[in-house]
Length: 539
Image (tube, rainbow, N blue to C red; front, side, top):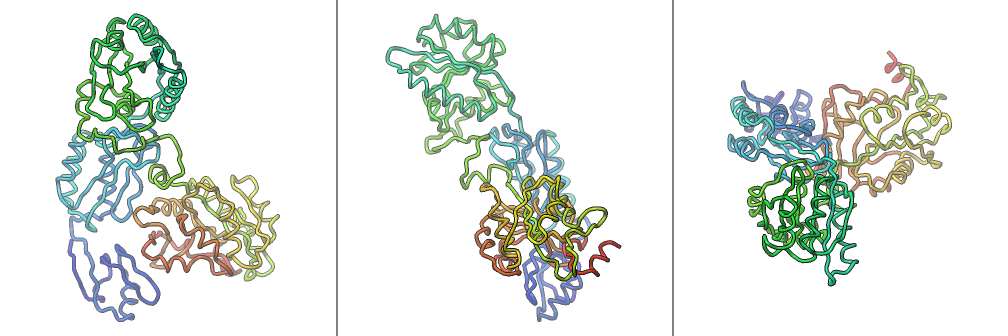
């Protein structure tokens, strides 16, 4: 790949290294310059630009990222469409991260141009969470470098995957003495049940018995015959292999695989088995919902992985957990800032369908049929087909007729009684109707029937506020179009918009948060405002 500054007149076909502006238009880093871009820069007085040029054997960053991500992806992993040299690998179901660390190290050690970052092995993940990301550093990578990375990735064939949680029947045995109060056992049972539920496990039953070896041995034999997992919470901590709980396991015919673990809190965990049933003697910290060594063992069991004494012995590095206040809850949905990074983004859409169609004459353009469907229905259908679960249509002018045209579609309809005051009122009405947990919204126009589901899906794939892609705009030949995807941080400012101008000014004010997605055709630029435009759309 050639890299460096060249005269503007020679830049057509090259990749722009640094963003540039001219005549009110912004050219983003990574854009492949065409003749129109070059002419615009020249007219603006720009004499040279820094560019990258691919040479024979080079592979574009997006294609390289996709190829490597596909090679790394194992069970229960979906690869997102690459963007700016990055391809994310997402979990398709809840489970724990299955990572071949040696293979990842081999890929990362091949060349500095190629990087792979993953979650820690055995971390609990929910469906939709990012498990790994592939990032190509330059704009292109040499083919032989990528080939070596692919070889390293394919050595195991299952480098990055998810071991899904499996429904298992679990029993809880709690022993007690005269000093143990019932409310303590009630709290313990609740915490254990929540812990299991977060991993897809079912607490099938709980029993409370005296803290005696003979009584406990009989109960262990009974519960292991009916359950996949038996948890024992003792009235006192296990102090020795000859103590009540380990002695009862052996008396019942089982064995103790490990007593003690190099994780704090969690040092006094016991791991054993009887037949095919796993037995865990809980450390005292398991009475608390805070992260502890029991969580590390339990998540592997929940994913159907066999846990051995050697596995537990290997948990010491990183096993000091005392400063971690909360344990992860992969199936919970707390509404906090960190939650957005742990789950798929909740993206809604607003269809603006309240306008008066003044330039179309006496006809309401949204009701005109194109291809056998009212124009407004094309927009709604594309959003639904793209997988947008929450679609809200804002009606106003001839509201009843427009709503009738949308009948049968899975969407919410809200009326803007103040539609004559301009588009801003419809935008405000739509935003007010969104559920509180929405992360981003696609604002679509009801008069753009050419925008297909694939274009919408590409906007969603590009959205990543953590990486600074908080406003996603479709483009064609360098021109920006619609619909636009907005992160929720802009909702307040969008709701304050007045008149008919929309929220376009917010794009210019937040260029550093804008991601442009180039589309294959000009449908994102074409709205049907006039009879002439309608004739062209029908031809």
